[in-house]
Length: 323
Ligand SMILES: Nc1nc2c(ncn2[C@@H]2O[C@H](COP(=O)(O)OP(=O)(O)OP(=O)(O)O)[C@@H](O)[C@H]2O)c(=O)[nH]1
Image 1 (cartoon, rainbow, N blue to C red):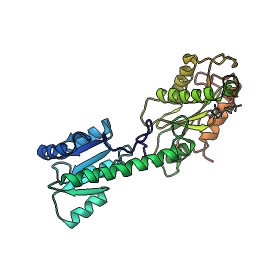
Image 2 (cartoon, rainbow, N blue to C red):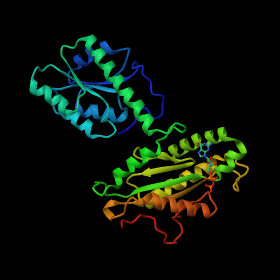
Image 3 (cartoon, rainbow, N blue to C red):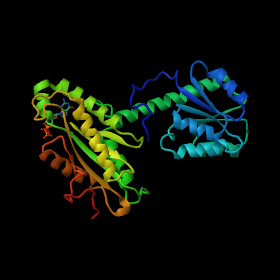
């Protein structure tokens, strides 16, 4: 599940939404374009392959999909879209000229939310699109309320717990390492005491953005784990990779040089505990406990520290072990 409007205010006005029209006949695309323009931004693809590529470049708000296309049929394409976590929640409406009961059932089974018959009736098309976009936006609002932290705009702990399970389940198909970073802003109580809670809130918002911008892969994510604590999940990342990301985050805070006169470093810094796990190697969900213990160690080593430190050979456990 991907919350498509995570970074912006979810809005209920559907105009301006991006609609991808997939049809092998340019004349059909033109007809739909004439109906939808200028209310919607219309993207077009004349094959399933092109449509997949476009979807990954910019996820549309809704897809209008022709059933009968050479090479990859609309039904096949819909099946592929529904298997991709990034795109699966985009509503698909089939546009079909077939009046066949079996075909109709196949559209529903492929994951469509609706279908429209050709020749397209402009009023029906516009109303169906508006209805499904509204449902989608309402769903996005609910997901935001459940999974997004209100202060910082990043995912919350509930999202972290649910999504970490995906990698940690014994039955999980993930065979590579997953890394978790637990990050805590140093001496934050002193910051609040000195600058006030509103300034403290501003720092938490900036901190969330700083961590987010330090993550380079689309599958990486940050969540607010507690008050001034953030948890980062790095799928498909071993200890060395996690150390690199953690160090990037630590130095980003240090170099930002945000004043914190009552801290021993006289600027805002973070401490980070790293751990990794890999179900295939019989390592498990103690990953959070281990990251927390490592965070504690980073704090006791003077803060502004990543632990374990990849450059030291102290043989401290880096991965959590299944027991
Ligand atoms: N402004 C603000 N402060 C918060 C929020 N959530 C937690 N805090 C504060 O974060 C501080 C955490 O303090 P401590 O747990 O003592 O940790 P610390 O001062 O960062 O000390 P170390 O972790 O040992 O470096 C407390 O003062 C909390 O009130 C929040 O949403 N906004």
